[in-house]
Image (cartoon, rainbow, N blue to C red; front, side, top):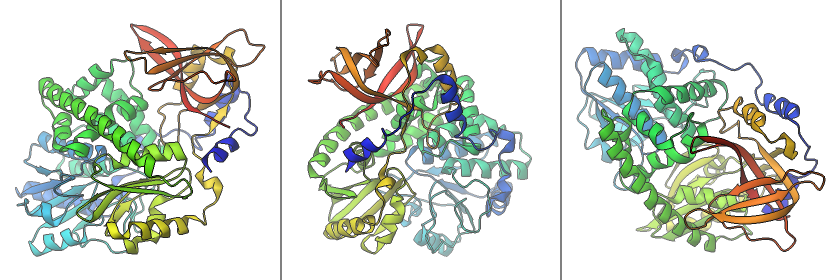
Amino acid sequence: MHLFLKKLRFDDVPILNKSALFELLSQRFDTQEKTLSQIPNPNLLHDASRAAKKIAAAIRENKKITLVGDYDVDGVSATAIMVDFFRQIPYPLQTIIPNRFSDGYGVSPNVLKRVDADIVITVDNGITAIEAAKICKERGIELIITDHHTPLETLPEAYAIVNPKLSRCYYPFEEICGAQVAWLLLGLVKKELSLDIDMKGFLDILCIAVIADIMPLTDINRAIVKEGLKVLMHSQRPSSIIIRDFLNKSSITSEDIAFAIAPRINSAGRLEDASIALEFLTAQTTNKAYTQFEKLNSLNELRRTTEAQTTNEAFELVNEEETIIVVAKEGWHEGVVGIVASRLVDHFSKPAIVLSIKNGVAKGSARSIGNINIYKLIKQNSSLLGKFGGHKMAAGLSLEDKNIDLFKAALNKSASKLSPADFLSLEKVMGILPSDEIDFSLLELLESFEPYGEANLRPLFLIKDAQILEIKYFGKDKSHTKVLLKQFAHERKPIELILFKKSLEMPSEKKLTCSYGVTKNEFNSRVSVQLIINKIYNY
């Protein structure tokens, strides 16, 4: 199926000049760009005012407050923002980020055993914590839930639930991440206590969370990421200094965060413990931040090795006839199944679920593509599951291993009603660029529409049946490819493309059809326009 779908995208692909490209990119934004001053009042978030008043009262009355976060980038970032805010008051805050392997997800009965507090605040979790809420009530702990995940029909019995996806919430923009919900709430706490804290000072961490949690980069998210990347370039926060030194660029893009920083922060929770990442983001000296970042680098290398091995094994288990891929195996590392699911989605152009089996229980992650709501499909078959949660493009789930085949069959039956168009990747090519349009002014045009990410994808362009002039390999182990080609017979100027982490062999017909993105390359103080191959098409 997936090769056929790739073909569909090449119908009537236009040849573009810069003017036409500018018009196409402008159409992505319905209204004028928002600024930070236009972020809607946090009071519009359901229960936010009630929660802020309770937190402020607890601080005045010197009560014990415990924060329970989450082990992904969004959860760790939300926790880090809370830690920094309470430090600036200053006020003691106990923080717990559950361990993926020993605690499971979010605030839970197991986590509550370690809590001695008057108030528990959750960030980026809690919307499904019905059992934990009961325990809090029994123990006289007031529970404040801040989350952004999709609620179930039954809500936890908490003092306050702050979540833009609640049906009774009237916040104008609901596609915000957990760190944003926490940040907005803290803005109200600041007001309640008349504190002199600059909320803009948290944007360097906040923008990392927005990008890493794949929030749509439109509306207020666009404003937050745009400003956050600027703050990141100048912030004296030790972790931001280390990020700048590591990236070593004159300006940082959302893609730098998505591909270089977020995976490192994520690796701690995936493979060991998220406290390593939290200590990086909240480090008070550059020495401490550097030490933690080195640990994250090592874990990220281990994650890559583990992920590559698991991906190879998962590929062997895929049944290409299935509409939704479901693979499971005993012993797969629970921390990499989400990344492996993404790899399967990229390759097969279908949603994928990857499950790790241990002691008769399968736990895993789902990733989607195009217009397919994977959370909705999973929910339709939730009678076979233990737990599940997530959103349209990504979800987590667990079930008894004896139910895997039943779940796979039921899921594929539900998916049989989907339209083939729903499977089309949203990464559609915009058009074909003649070689004389590829220059520094094109780069400037593209930069003017940054930040790129979800709902504002970096533009991809098409090269179709181009004549390959030369193929070279580079890098320490010659694992990267440089392709020199001629796009049209009449063009004098050849085009050079880069394919990272893959050695491309010369096709027998010496022709190439691929999509590519245009990026700025900074090396040894020299700036150049670089064309990066996104996908090679066999059609």
